[in-house]
Length: 179
Ligand SMILES: [Mn+2]
Image 1 (cartoon, helix red, strand yellow):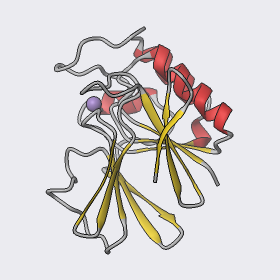
Image 2 (image 1 turned 60 degrees about the horizontal axis):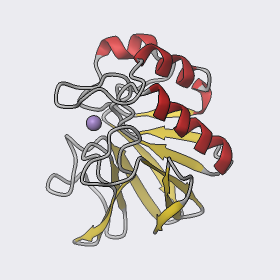
Image 3 (image 1 turned 30 degrees about the vertical axis):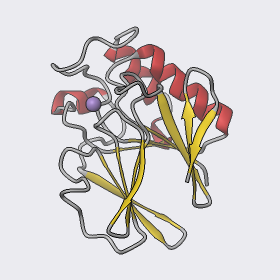
Image 4 (image 1 turned 90 degrees about the vertical axis):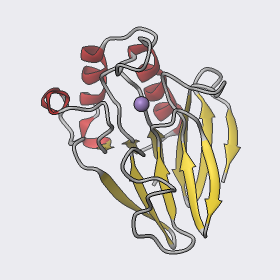
């Protein structure tokens, strides 16, 4: 099964549509959202075409395909307008022999690891910067932010299929990294 992995849409209708275009283009079957879905957050400028209600409608239209975890900008009120659960702090995926611990990144990160085995994957957003590193045998992957990328990174998502992670630039549609 192919996953599309996106984080930090922060209410951008424009980049939510880009995420859904990538979902279709890549032939993904599931969308994993790593949090910060609707609200822009007090530290961020408004992203392009900020419209949380439209983002909720777009994602609700594919509710049976979405798995979400809670970001630090996601509140109970956000859950009331979304038809799929987003209030869990993490979700576990299994990719071949590896466990993938998917979370937003404000609670669990490389300096505050959840229980994982060597070779497992910590997958989170939150920093708005794509990442693919290893520390103490644990791999840390980050898709970057769909809507508000930081440190000159692209508007970005990832795919996962058969143990292969690919990073996709949402503006060009091109892959720019793989693991
Ligand atoms: Mn964020």
